[in-house]
Length: 117
Image 1 (spheres, rainbow, N blue to C red):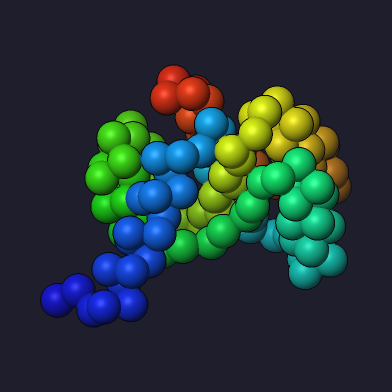
Image 2: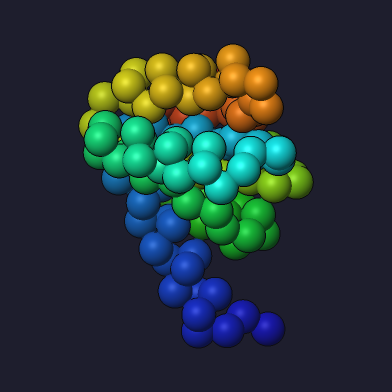
C-alpha cells in the first residue's frame, strides 16, 4: 500500500523527469563519500542534481512522465542525474568519473526525450 511519503516522492521525481532536458542513470557502486560529494558539487555548478531514489518509485515516476524506457535500467544501486540546462556539461562530468580508479558506471540516459543506452 502506498504511503503519502512515497506518493510525494513519485510526484516530485515525475515532475523533475517531465521538465528535465537530460536524465542519466548511473551505478555508483564502490564510490566513496568524497567522490560522491565531488560529483554532486561539480554537477551543481552545471544546474544539475544527483538523486538516489528507490528503483520501484523511480520506475513509477518515469512511467508517469512518459519515460517508460528507463524501467529496464533500474536495477541495482541507481543514482539519477537531472539537468534542466544543456545536457552536455553533466554528461562530460559523468564521462570523467567513468575514467577514475573506481569508476562511475553510466547505465542509460534520456536527452530531449530520446533514450540512449
